[in-house]
Image (tube, each protein chain N blue to C red):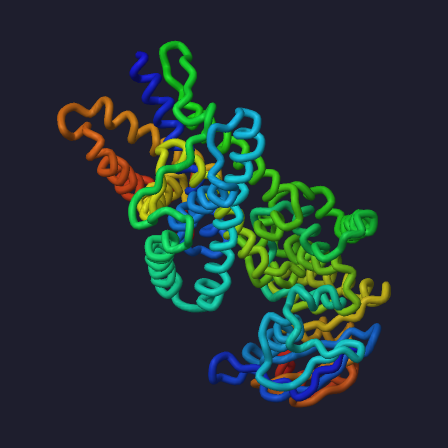
Length: 319
Length: 236
């Protein structure tokens, strides 16, 4: 029972990480029907942005808890968000917007190209900046005193601080997102644009800006995930966006692409399935090497038996 | 108030509008008539900025309009209720109306205009929280018109407001258009129902395959043999 509870906590925290990234896929898909396959790299850039901020602060270490939680971590988070949002906005403006009227395949190829370009840019150039570490291999994420490696014991279950950080981040981000989409002018503009872009323009909505905002919102959440990833795994690298992006995309499809609640549920389900598979599937199939197999097997099952996803609307207009 | 000069609009290499000029004076109802493919809808979509013209000019009260993005044209005082109504189906009546007022920030004025729309179309007021996707054609048309009114336009462009409506509902819509004009809104109307449109109109332009064939007052066009034969379906 303890093992089950422990794996549930592990799965939920992993799932929260997926969910934070998955929201970006789903928000962008909801508004422009585009799978932004470079979104995993936005997450990676977010993690590097957080790390870069720490370096620019003079690599502070041996921190008092007040300084660590009150200054260093918020600054890193903000740096990550700025880097990721900036990247996403440039991507939208120069790689996707010019292709908006083009056939579906064109932006998809553009996305794959961007994904490779961003990985290579970080791999080749980041480490060349004086004072920055070699980016061709994994970079250790900063140790935050009073946070890194710390945990609580609750009824025989270990809860890492990083686990709590990820779950709280998901809760805060989705609440803010809900408020933004339903209670602000720009949120209403995004909803209208996702239903009918041309008519939205007739309402006086700047559709280009609404679409860019969707990219920015998704990137901000991905950056939070990037920070959470660094705190959880203690290192970051230029390739980290690939598998995380694939998993988050799986989560978005699992929940029903275009549906924000679906992305959250899909992420959490996927995380729990992965954690449970490595515990309860016997023999070598339960080894951690197989966890990706089970995750993608789940994706295939959903695509076959419930293509609209767990929470997706019934696809009545499917050809 | 609205002045269109030598407007040419093309989809790819196909010209849908082949150099038309017309004008709408303040306080008038002006109709564009013609069969399918005459270029009426294309003309409205160009005026509201959804399509960029190949050449020609659009002027509103002495200001050049073509080249301005669609969302900015709304703030210049033009509202466009598109063909097929194009409501936001997953949104409620009230949210649809509020989107019509998207460019405005005067909350008191918006509230006042909401009440005005509900007074004009009581059925909308009764169903204000329901999603618009569930409505009948007539109710959807009322909502589409109400939504266009919510930006407080000086020029209201209506594309086929009577499409798919019963004769009684068509009458209601036409009466509302007359009321809007009486309250100071200028109307540019595109209609298949030439009889209903011309009865209201100060002026009508008859389009055929992208060109204006002739123009006259609404009354004169109603008596015109060419119009009667082609658009009113009367045997002479």
